[in-house]
Image (cartoon, rainbow, N blue to C red; front, side, top):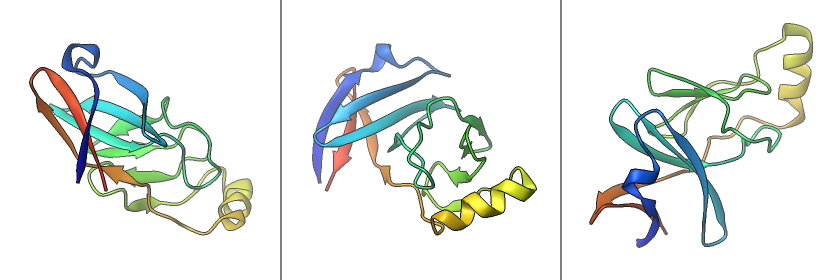
Length: 116
């Protein structure tokens, strides 16, 4: 595991989100419920940005097609369920895929992201 200093801890207060570039990865850092999560910044469904997605109970919901992902594992909780008529069609355009997640740690006043 290669650890990359993504930003200062003070740049990501509780409740905030920030997209950072870590090597070739565009990563969305989320500080929620006392945890810092690092996920791919685009939904694997249609590659649209996730920054404005709803976060609730360790789940991030894509603001575009409402696919829902577990923030800890990246696993799909619900795949493009809305709107019913369009959601199923759009969901079928790309098969269900987990959201890439990256390990994080806070050390020396910085947020570090692990890249394999």
